[in-house]
Length: 294
Image (tube, rainbow, N blue to C red; front, top):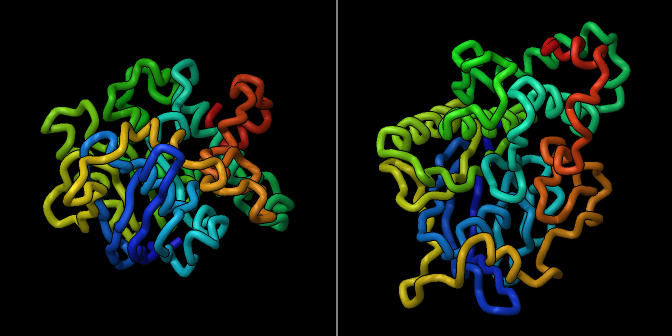
């Protein structure tokens, strides 16, 4: 999917204990790298979730690839994907890289494709699955062969940057028009931050619009601040998600698509049906072989 344009006009989200963020306005073309800048607690994660249709803004409007927010939350979720969002897209430390990729590919095929696609010959489906995974890994810059145990490396054994790249790769399997990445520069060295920004910039240059939460925006990005001139924020980003009124969260039933049956704080796309994951070890040998990850 080609990248999508993102526009916000006076966007804000208020919960029972105050504003998570407000008066956010910006405009970004398709294929832009958008950096949501601010200190922890300034509503950065809430803004990321609002722009991807996972939380419902309480004031202002936004448009994401033609989907008007806050009304068309389901449409925004269908064209976006999330990576590295604590409590939403967490990787399972006990599972391997191959198991995560395999699971996401199966979920994408089941919930993200058409019925006609499910009826195609098995060999054709397997080939497409492998191609999707390879494209996503290439875009995320994750070389499975360079990992300690290759594809069988457990997530707990990955370096911080490798885990972030894996999370990005999982999100890109669905080929979204908008990729949202949280905590982009959290606990990274200067060299690692530069490495990740180079990665996200390359994804944007390839056509996918990227929204990345950070403490300091890189040069050349469309910078969006969640800190108003006269205030410093309203609590930590994780708490801000809880502070938002339950009515402000995206209704999981506001769209008939299976992706919207996920938890309102979940990614609501095939990648986050993994939130109700069945252990990857229970996946059939046939399906594993079909994905080319046996």
